[in-house]
Amino acid sequence: MSETSTTAANDNTNAAAATNQQQPDPAKPNESANPTGTSGAEAKTSTETKPGETKTETTKTTETKTQETTAPEKYELKLPENALIKADQIEKVSAFAKQNNLTNDQAQALLNQRNEGVADYLASEKARIAELNDKGWAQELLKDKEFGGEENLKKNGELAAQAATEWFGEEFVTLIKQMGINHHPLLFKGLVRLAKASESDRLVHGNTQSNGAEKRAADIMYPTMNQN
Image 1 (cartoon, rainbow, N blue to C red):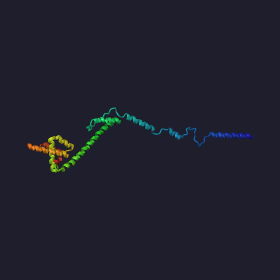
Image 2: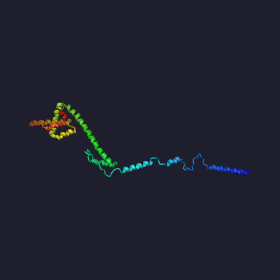
Image 3: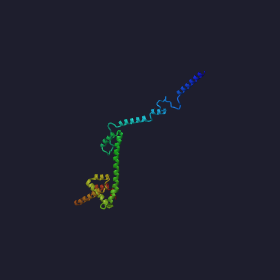
Image 4: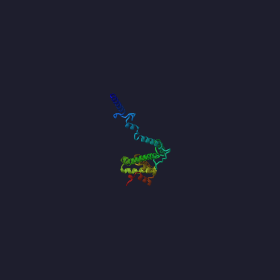
């Protein structure tokens, strides 16, 4: 009986040991479920696609294809109405647009912009010269010892207009006024001297009369000098 009890006890001990070996330790990770040794969160992260990656690659591919097909085979460009730039600008803008892969509308906008730039520059220059003519040069003539003084300047203005009409014609008078250089000291003084030389010549030949064209020229070129 003693031997039977001992044998039964040994069998129970061996069965318990086997059972303990089969049960996993709760304190240790389940290596059989994750043979790589990484945690579930890590495995999930490694297999997931980062948000935006696929979208970014697709966007870049789409942009590249768009850029490759933007420029037309031939640009159809036209100069703006009353253009200030020359026709050769069409070819230059087309070449630039082709090189930079611009659309036809973008190239046309660039051509228009160039024309507007020239127009803006000319307008600013015209305004600058007009101010210089009316304030700077006119005041310089008024203070000139030989040609200036209110009464003397008025007389010299008539002489300058007379010479301009007689020697260059009424179109020249209008052009000078439109250009805004009628008060330029060099032009004014030169015309006055020419008028005086012509006047001396008329005295020698007995012709001292002035015509209505010369009076009109004075009114056009120097209206402020001819105010009564």
